Amino acid sequence: MVAGALGRLAIGQLGQSLDGRIATPTGKSHYINGADGRRHLHRLRALADAVIVGTGTVTADNPRLTVRLVSGPNPVRVVVDPQMRSPAERAIFAGDGPETWVLTRAAHLLGERRAQPLDLPDTPAEILDLLAARGCRVVLVEGGTATLSRFLEAGALDRLHLMIAPLLIGSGHPGFDLPPIDTLEQARRPAVHWLPLGPELLADVQLSGDDRHVD
Image (tube, rainbow, N blue to C red):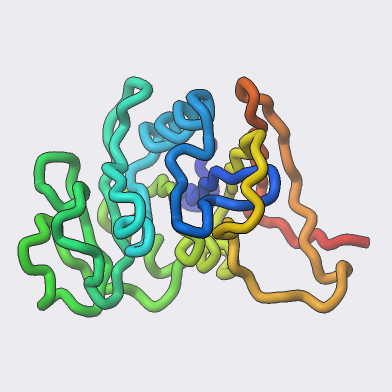
């Protein structure tokens, strides 16, 4: 990964099925991606200063957000939780791993969560500014749908790594929730570098400076 403007880089990551699902209708997602895809995710974590998830991911998946499948340091774990609704018993709040920050408007509800509450900025760009001011200049936005879509819609991501697994889920949770467009002329067509990772396919999507649309 190469840092962009001001030596900063924001990269989104999503693992999905061939039909664009990240979980079954009941929320089961372990694991859509295989060993190669999961190693790539852990490699991204090791390269990042901070990894961001939303409260939905913390609640549904109980992630540790640590580096285990490759060698490298753990990133700071950042939870976007405006109302402090993430269950306190989740692994990310146990206090036995890397540092955890909670971006919230309800710091008084921290309770037994072992985390540092920080005032939640209004926009994704301001979140990245806050993290950069605290020394986190390379940021991985790992999910879930709402959080990643908000960063993507705001134009706050430089890159998107989309890991496509060779399976069809059918009905289930989609990876993105973005505003609709009326015509294909409004669709973005970013530069994409395709990389095979075992049986999976990685789309390395270049987003920074992208203003190209379908002709």
